[in-house]
Image 1 (cartoon, rainbow, N blue to C red):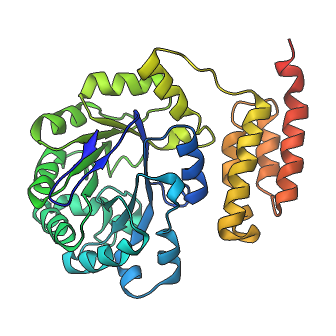
Image 2: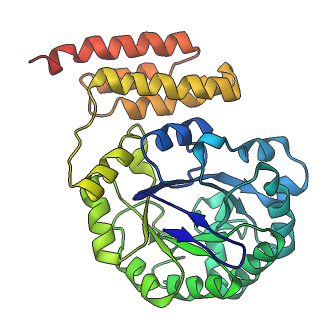
Image 3: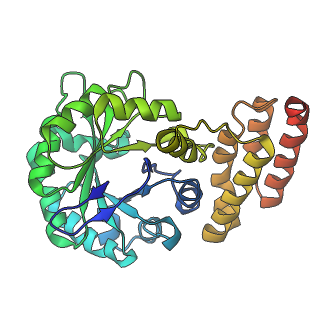
Length: 330
């Protein structure tokens, strides 16, 4: 798939992209997902206001590694000029694209007229995309939802507005803001957007297996599938999707020892990028996700919630392998 437009283009090979997930899809996790075959990644959302005011944390969230490309940075805000200035600042990390967050349902974002709240004003969406596209020399994309609420389903209108503003691609999550992440997900709205615009459409929502990725492609005609929560604690999902869709092969989940090795590598990268104190605090939730479905998972997740050092994580992984050794024995 090619994300092209007035500002050049980005070639994406592979069948699945990693969604931008605040507090989760950091540089370490993105790198692991790319190693498992993620075709494209989008970084954690960054406040345009924070960037413009020189906020250190906002600048740190922008960081991209060469090993994770092609990669986009994602900005959120509601002022076209402020978004354009932030986009120019974001070019310091040389992103392959800039994505605009028009879908975040979190109260602290939507409640401040950003994220999914923008969908209530399609013309503002168009103006924001236009301002950013005119400010930078890379493709500009947008991520939206089905709509704001049950009676405000307007993804087609917003997608058309973004396309008119110069968006090079649009990602559609098949839920409203009102739903947050509650079922059901509506893939039909993704198909409707695909039929309504002439730019690539990326489908997102409830892809947790290779079979579901195949179904999303088939049911919507989307150009790329984006995986979010389905990859948490399971970055090998990208390899499984690629194998299934490109070769017709079904890859099993890795054995427990391999899962723990991947977890250790991910958190070791996080320690390298952020320092041990910050990385280990964030590692608690990642470790818990890697424990899902394992023997003694409840107790192991409880231990994960107390992690303080990387050595603590090593000991936890050893305990996991010992606890599950009999389960995998022939």
